[in-house]
Length: 54
Image (cartoon, rainbow, N blue to C red; front, side, top):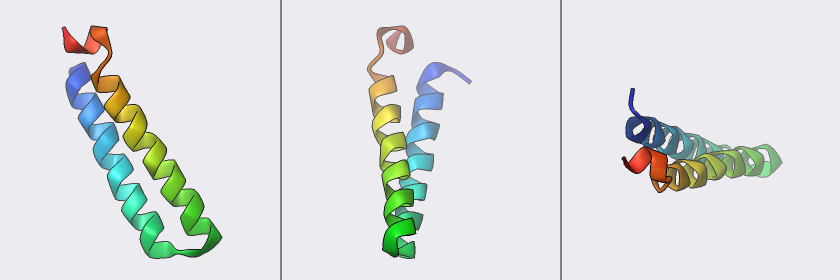
């Protein structure tokens, strides 16, 4: 798997975890949502790394 594909997978998994956290609700749901959003941000940032763009 190349770097670009890995970035998309991390972003997609983060989106799924974020959706699950939003459906859960409460304090646990807020934590799960934050965890998922962190994965989305890290996946998007990984797409812009110079080593992945080559």
